[in-house]
Image (cartoon, rainbow, N blue to C red; front, side, top):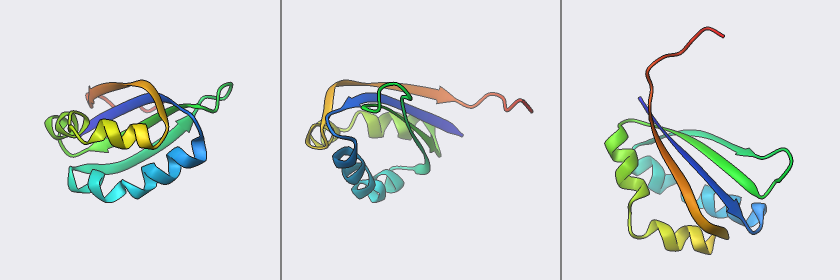
Amino acid sequence: MATLLIRHRVRDYARWKAAFDAHAAERAAAGSLGGRVFRDGDDPEDVVVILEWDDLDRARDFAEREDLAPIMEGAGVLGEPEFLFLADVDRPGC
């Protein structure tokens, strides 16, 4: 299992979330198994998305797609998003 963590600022959360939800089928087709969305408790326009992926290389391919940047810009993402590609190595009990 692999995880793609995305952090970015958004102009308007509701607008961004609608665009994110509309892009679900494309993520799934690229290997995303779903995930979670978080907002910073002190800055609700700071968004973190954690997506589980079937394969780390497929997650990387998705994040590097040429059509992703204009989609994110249209959704109101401000600046460059931060992408972290994480390999699952342990699941401690607590």
